[in-house]
Length: 504
Image 1 (cartoon, one colour):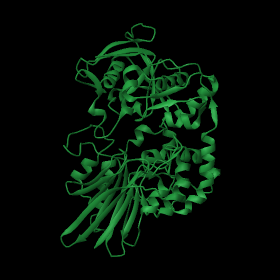
Image 2 (cartoon, helix red, strand yellow):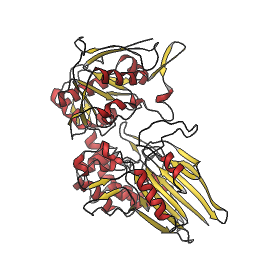
Image 3 (tube, one colour):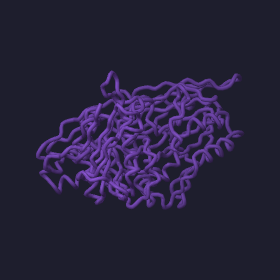
Image 4 (cartoon, one colour):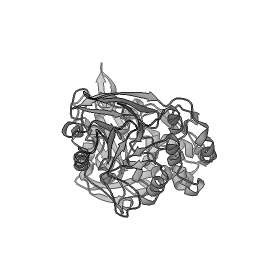
């Protein structure tokens, strides 16, 4: 008996086939993905979470819920014929009512075993058994990384409990054992080991898909969260897949179940360049309002900032990062600030628009102020210094930040301090200058460091931060804070760079 699964994950608000930063067409988006699906009674279409956050389109609707009759992400998924979804960590970013609005508009069932709905209004189920037309029983459960509890603002979890990911994945595996022919776990989490070598990448419990494959007995593991293209791998008998983010591609999984057992093949396929007329035409007026909003000036700068190369910015300082740090310092009154940039070179042109800000600051981060000291600051700077390696005496980006996926966003830029790296020294002992911006030593004192809610958890190799006391948490996302700052100081004077020196 044959069956197939179409799987997406980490769509991050990409409904229309457009790159919002450049306002150019893109072979991506839910509407294009839907054109690729060929559904029959032996086919399931499944999504692995993180759909509500990520584009100006989704942001505009969530901030203006009366701008369209139903949640547009749900409408696009309904048109595509999705059967089941699980939740991603970013789907909690806007609170209970926004999540309920999305799930109520969705035809697909939400399967997420380790999420407990204290109000009972979300319609989440722990597992289901889906009988295909050919009689096969497919058992399906969903799990979201329990790091939701670390990252999410507590007011957004007032009516939600997120339980231990592995514990509930194990419970559901046992629950499904005698109820189905094939068991599927939709896990919004990734792999803690290198898939080629088995090398441990992190001791964090944020991603534990390898452990799930090794210790549990699922036939198929549909993973997400890491934004990695993974196809056709088997770990301890479990077939595992994952896609890149932003609706650029999908997994087609083809399987045969017979007397000899289960045989599975999977492929990663592009979103394509075509879409169906509906719901494209119904959603188009909303998309046009989004585009108009993006092009409205929020202020001006005396000097535009040209796009900055990743290595050059890390070596010599980034004006874009310096601007973001200035925003963070003003918003919080912290002593020091650190920020990161996306994987692609960015600048900021004048007049500044919402589109320009969204292209330069890709994340929906809020701010956190931590209590730190000189020891902590040196540790985080040593992590930054590990971004570099020397090849024939010249600095290059270390493979640690490029494989198994590109992570330029895990190199941070600091303001409020003056610091220097010597790349001739071994990793872990490269910080050769660390002073306050006025040149005085930090000394035996405590300071306030402003960072993102993402970085404050220690994610990205900054483990030392997760044990630092939290002094303050903000609720406004950084793109909005940047917009407010530019409005306030328009025309914005030329931005000074980061006070960093790298020697080699």
